[in-house]
Image (cartoon, rainbow, N blue to C red; front, side):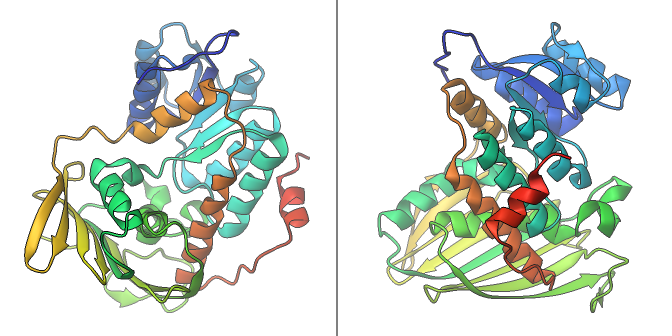
Length: 352
């Protein structure tokens, strides 16, 4: 990618949280040449030192407050989920654009507040919903938009992770906001709605399990298996299943199947891989290959955000889609989180 940098120079960024995924996104951003790393913050001195190898001139700081005091143009956030909303709002209200790991918030209320803060500050806000950026999903979306599948009426989505997260906070409802739905299902919901150009959602239902037992409204545990049905106002039905630690016979099972009146298409992982995907289009019993590995898609969302920031993009109303996805997740969880007036969301986002 080649960036067009403004006369004042490339945007200066802070990287908040530089574990594996934070460093990977940092590397992808710096590789564009669109922005420079001005500050790094992580509670682990070892992680911070590893990140500084990518940007020797970046300053190591102890807090987001210290980072923002440097007058940065943007902040890349890769911290635990419970911190995302508050840290994003803090950065946005101080004039920094934000690229955040998913989920942006644990509930739709938190996500609305972040989007309201971005709108009020007129700053670019994006979330690392990276599966959108696979070549396979891009080609499938193009096929749907071109009418090659006819009218899509059924979408089947699967994401089973045979391992599950290795950090305890993922399994604490107060810190994570939820289990495998919050971790993996967010990608599935976003993929389906994005591919279909975000039609309105009519009804949502979900069933959650922990250790093979229905959660049945319990709030002291998070789910490790979930199934959900999302009915769209177009009449299409989206079905999803996701899990941690499932006996799946491989590392991961990831698939997105789109069935239409004139054809079908599917994205599927290869041999249990988390990273390699094929995409095909179907017509009757015939099939056409749309995409195959290798495909270096993991850092594309971060790189694209940096390029847009360097090009002067400010608040993008597309960020409202983040609210729609979070509302669907709330409904899968059975959370009563009705829409709140924009003024209320802005008040939540306002600094103290």
